[in-house]
Length: 236
Image 1 (cartoon, rainbow, N blue to C red):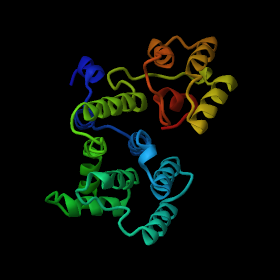
Image 2: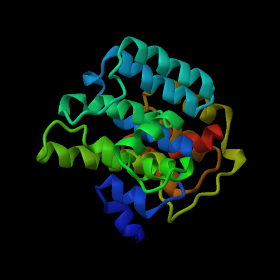
Image 3: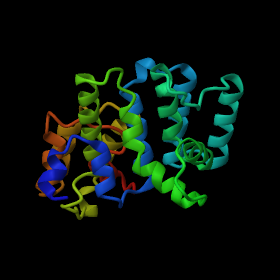
């Protein structure tokens, strides 16, 4: 895949399959961001699953607590984590896909045999197919489906950046103002201050056009895991 193809591609599964060096934390946050596109369709229990996955991605909770959350929710809603071919239930499947843990991988392998019983292989396949599974959440197979995939591709680029242009972030750009702005946006999920963050970084001496342009691009969506915000906050 070339850089031009990476920037123009509107198929998230292609982006994921062509470039495999993705940190697990960012993959989980990408899945959560895609789920939040359909937040209005999620039950309270499904929202709790996504929120728990976000906390696990940032090590706010551990794997045992995430597993306990899943068990508690499934005891109240036995079919919460099962996709049964009904489009109305697809969002249930999407929700547990965000919580990439051993149980989710086992369920995925049961429904889609991979020819291997190793957890690492199952987890790799789950990650590769994550965007495909999430794209199914669109409620129709025509224009809305295409819009859904394009929206996910935009989210993916916001989270992972441009792998063809690795950025070296100077610690001197991580001023109190920049860190405060980034932290506030990360916690609130309100990224309207991205242009202000660009000004703060530029005032600190940042001259990287990729960073500044990403912050100031009015057409670029921003979500938790945004590569620039992560750099400012020192997140992997």
